[in-house]
Length: 110
Image 1 (cartoon, rainbow, N blue to C red):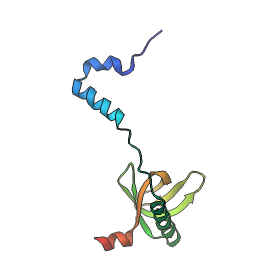
Image 2 (image 1 turned 30 degrees about the vertical axis):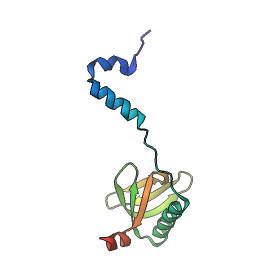
Image 3 (image 1 turned 45 degrees about the vertical axis):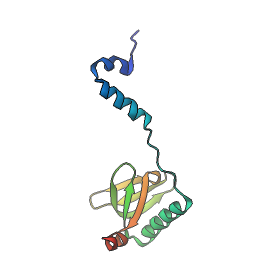
């Protein structure tokens, strides 16, 4: 029977600095920030307004930088928004949205 030692077998080939960085990375379990009720309500109102008026919206996501487009539909069962961008149509999970901004507001702030 073959016994796999996982990362232990590679530790001899790694520098001590690399091992320390890996340990620190494991400790840094990145958690999304807990939102206040006011922030969630503002996010919901912005997304609903953009969806109803077919306005261009800028969604800032936790993983990626941002997505700019028009919300075409909402899949309630999967908790996803379908957003049409200039190149493609993307499904965005509601839980991955950090912030939402209407493009009119974005252009005014520049």
